[in-house]
Image 1: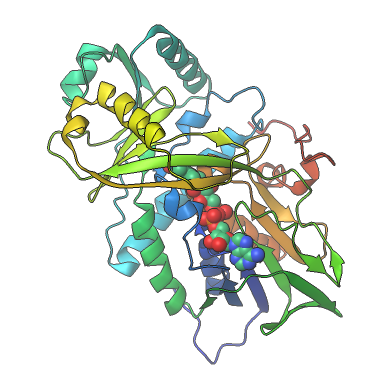
Image 2: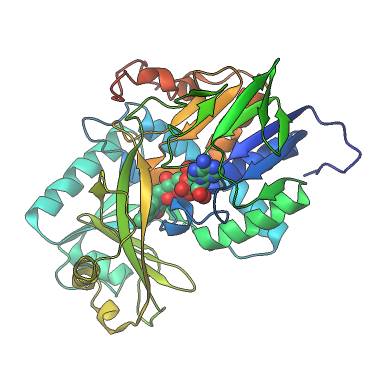
Length: 394
Ligand SMILES: Cc1cc2nc3c(=O)[nH]c(=O)nc-3n(C[C@H](O)[C@H](O)[C@H](O)COP(=O)(O)OP(=O)(O)OC[C@H]3O[C@@H](n4cnc5c(N)ncnc54)[C@H](O)[C@@H]3O)c2cc1C
């Protein structure tokens, strides 16, 4: 891996707006491709959804897509997991930081009939997509993982689903960005962009060949372009989806791999055991409600009783950038030279390195694959609803 030194002639100058995982990985990839990059955030870098996440890299869970989901979201998620397979070992070695990147798979657990029916659907979807999976009785699953309670009736093993410590990734990326020569500027809120010939000017930051909007749940409708109110993404495309979570202190007897059940999950890291998450559509506040946290812990303890004895280390809420088809928008905006990557909903950690690759090829004027082209802004109508515009990619 080569990095740019100060004498290098840059191919382009690009501004990346929003230093979540999507913006940070994109800035890094661009810098590694010979682009001079400025990465700004209206707050401290990576204090939005990327910090709030559980760090699951879970393509198999997307296999049983809901009827409204983008028809190729599952394929995109698989490609996202592939991208991590190359990126995580590199970042781990490069930063000399453990990222807790596990390929241990996940257990989807059922404790009642509706949950077993859901596992049936997920199992059928995995099989139809040639994705490895294995159904076990509760007793067989308890032999593999003694943390499971007697209430667990059956389990679907999902060997493709992995996880990573997103907090460790953020630290490692900050170091890599500095090394790659990316200028990272906190506490700058971008509200105004002006065209100067073929370039874009941002006050105090200068001229850029391209701007990339990676501002998470902020869809950019407060922005003005050439003095006019502008919309980088159509109104209504990005839908806030609040998620409350808690972290427990690590405890003896906790599971070693991710456990999923109903709408919840347990994601054990070296330094904490994450229990998540609420899913509150069209809610954008970050308030933590005690009764919701109690409910999350109660449900998790029913799957894994040892968690009842663990101390709560922290509680928090984050806001996922959702879309009507649960899939991200990655591509050009309606403005020449301004790209967007937003709406990663519950898969933004999984999809960050892949999104960075796609955006880098876009900026370098390289061809995108048919799969990647299916996630452009054009699929949304005036009301912000996704319409079916793509062919299914086999
Ligand atoms: C509770 C919860 C659990 C989750 N679990 C997972 C998981 O297990 N796996 C997974 O893959 N995904 C998960 N997600 C989803 C994932 O966190 C998001 O999809 C992803 O973090 C989005 O990344 P981002 O970089 O687009 O946005 P963010 O991380 O939100 O970053 C956007 C940044 O843009 C900045 N910004 C906004 N407006 C401006 C402006 N005008 N000027 C400058 N900067 C600006 C913000 O300050 C912010 O730092 C979870 C999310 C939540 C909330």
